[in-house]
Amino acid sequence: MKAKYLQSLFTIRSQSSRSSSAIPASLSFSKHPAAAVALLALFAALPSGRAADFTWNGTSNAYGDNASWLDGVAPGNAGSSSTDNAIFSNLGSADFVSPTLPGSRSLQTLTFTADARAYTFGGSGTLSIRAAFPFLTNNSAATQTFNLPITIINGSSQITNTQATGALVFNGGLNISHATANRVVTFAGLGSITHAGVIANGGSSTASGVTVTSTGATIFGGNNTYDGTTTMNATGGVLSLNGDNSGADGAVTITAGTVKLGHSSALGSGIGATSVASKPWHYLLVPHTAVNESQTVTGLAAQYTVKAE
Image (cartoon, rainbow, N blue to C red; front, side, top):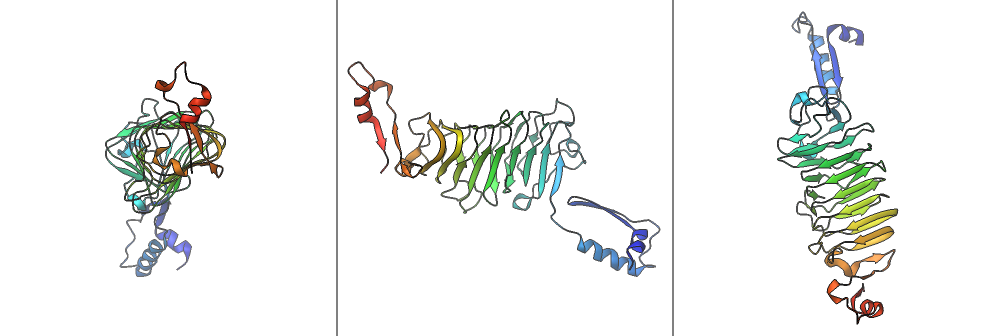
């Protein structure tokens, strides 16, 4: 059947993964059986599972309401099958910058545009983001805050803050994996990234890890429990480990950049495998109770320097 003839019988409009069709009321498939066959064949040939973009409309803080999104449809909760990409910009009212999840929701990616406002995410559920590379990106100079747990599903991924003046703040937990596979999450970009919550293996994973390539300030303030390697590989970057990581037994490897320790157990229980550019790690952490007038710096260093074997 000719394409022009098909076009005269019906119109199909596709927007991302959401498709709608309009068929003239006057069309009778009993009179046009060939058209019916062609229509079914055409729908069968349409791509399925295509990525769909959902842009926040700024009309309320209700994440699950269709009206909160530009095209009148909210992202779904397809879990590891999600192809939904959420986009946050400066659309709508500045009064509605606190997206609140009604329960657990899933996405493929989450992106803040260059002109995005500062948003604060909350709610009663977990935000699961399907592994894409990168899967969460801040392109704005604003601070984007997440007060809810995040789980990465389907693979290793990357959290990126592309602006030196922008910031990402995570106050909820982060599960690096959702299943048995060990994954790696990378913190990348130029700006500040602060993770105050617990970073965990997630699922039944036993050795998921973290890599930092961000040249900005990356701060881990939670009492992390992931057991994979922490790799610092960011020339000019600074990674601050401020939590009690004694529940984690992964190695710490520094190939570039600076690592600052803000807790006596910041390196976790895997200090024996810690290295700096393939060289053994040495660190000196002197308790304040050991400092007195009779002590010398040399003496304190001899007592409290730890060397990895």
